[in-house]
Amino acid sequence: MKKLLLVGGGRPGNLLLAPLYDALKHNEAYKPVALFVAPEGVDPISGDLAACFGFDEAGSFIAISLPKGSAVEHLATVMTGIEKVIASEKPDLVMVCGSDNAALGAALTAAKLGVRVAVVDAGLRSYDRSDGEEINRIAIDAMAEYHFVSEHSGEYNLINEGVADDKVFFPGNLSIDSLVKLMEQANQMPVSRAHGFRPKSYALVILNPAGHFSRKEPLEMMLRLLTEISLKTTVLIPQFNGMDPAFTDIENLKIIDSLSHAGLLMLLRDSVMLLTDTEELQSEATVMNVPCLTMMESASRPVTIEIGTNVLVGLDEEDIISRVNDILQPGKHKHESSRSKIPEKWDGAAAARIVTILDRIV
Image (cartoon, rainbow, N blue to C red; front, side):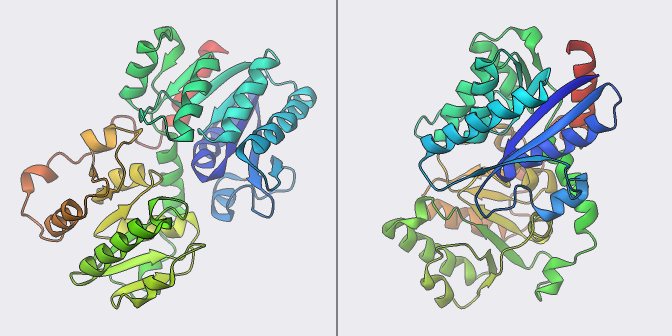
């Protein structure tokens, strides 16, 4: 029996880790150990994800808590914590999920200790070196022996960077495995109706509290945008820490309390469109065929743009309003909607394919 240490940090990493752990624990050839990294006072894994994948039982996972500090201090905490876990668990392989500092720390520590590293969601590139996670992705992939990619761009990027093609595998997108499982649970929660909204009667807005709109000038632009959109449809935005009081002045904008991830997925599914400045829900919006306008200049998942519903609009206020108008006028661009389909292997079976590949290589 091979012991595999799976490491995730934050919601994106956990959405990759959970279905993989679930598939491995039902295979007698493996003993998976899950390790979650989270800031002090924050649950290592959300309650709905824990319930879906069996992490709600005592002793079902290991957690590392991050005290307040800089990114470098967090990385040091992760590395010293994972060193102790590797020493006690003696895994045959460390599987890194995500691209945050927890993932980087896991890859660095395992490589230094001579333990083989595999990375899921490998090879993604935004080519924006100002993004800390882009640096992490490059470093993690450089230290990994095995690379499991979620889309073809990952294969091309890794091979162009010198990774041997027999070390690159294409099982699909694990976050869609989590989506499929969570939606089974979420279908029992009519979230939009519970808040008084009919499906497809509102635009969903998800903003990064530490993103562009935490600064004065972009915030003023965002408020103008939301005011303009609210004249055409209801705007729904989940509450977040540091939300500017000016959001409450927009008449047809509704602020709701923070939701579980399953609840957020239901709101996304029932929305007419998503406006966001983060990559976090781009994959899910593509699979659900919800038009997504992303206020970024680059994206690490080009397949959501090439084949999905995602459009990069940057901070071009005029372009955003124009595209919102197009979305809210069904049928105006039927030739564009015909491009929308589910990317290859984004079918909820990526974890099973990874286990089959591990049977050959581990």
